[in-house]
Image 1 (tube, rainbow, N blue to C red):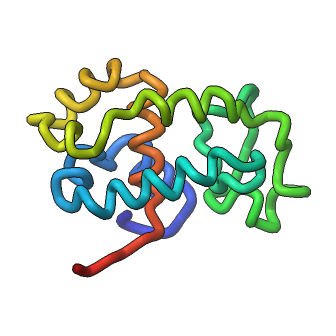
Image 2: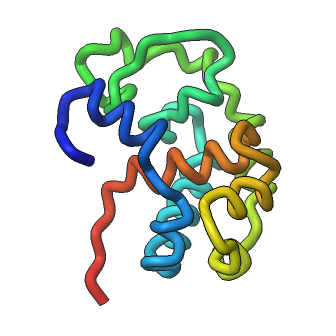
Length: 136
């Protein structure tokens, strides 16, 4: 991302991050990220942080660090997290190998149900909030 200010990071993650570019550039890393995120989603709601805002049941201001930020009292409202919808979106993601076949970001979005589909928005969020860096 271009800067570490909350607004810059939000804009990058929401509007500029390319899930297609991340998957094509390093499918192994993308798969690892998705596996870790999927595993975290199987646990208690508080273990999945930062939590994708698209899966909050009502509007809530959360920092990028979510429950791990001192700015969110008690880590935010755990009941506000729609973990069932999050898990369903993970189950709708095809294998990364199939996603690498997409010709463009638009093609990837269309394969996952369009730009507002839960699966696409989850994929974009997980890859854009990446905190992993691997060199093989």
